[in-house]
Image (cartoon, rainbow, N blue to C red):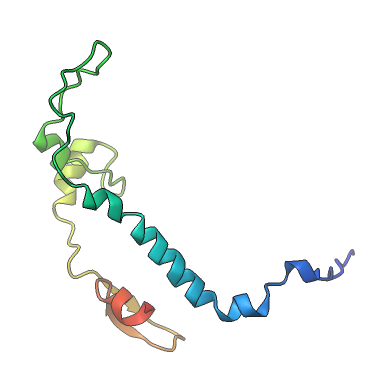
Length: 123
């Protein structure tokens, strides 16, 4: 039987200690940059200057989807593969409160509300 030997880790593959210690600062900075990138679009939230331009010869003349069709669309294969049947059956799905039960050999057991989970347990 072949036993795979451990390959040594190259020094270039190891994260520098300073970077490892400051990883949370790096993640916060990256999050701040990504949020800041959203600002220019919201600052320029004025009415579009070119809204009055007529449609060109290559414009798509697609009909807007009816509100009922868009509002009642479901993709719940748990209920049915037929879109109309799944819409009717999905109306009975109770999503609030959405509770998770943790049992067995866990540090914290009990019933947890999933809507409160990120605020209380992840941060």
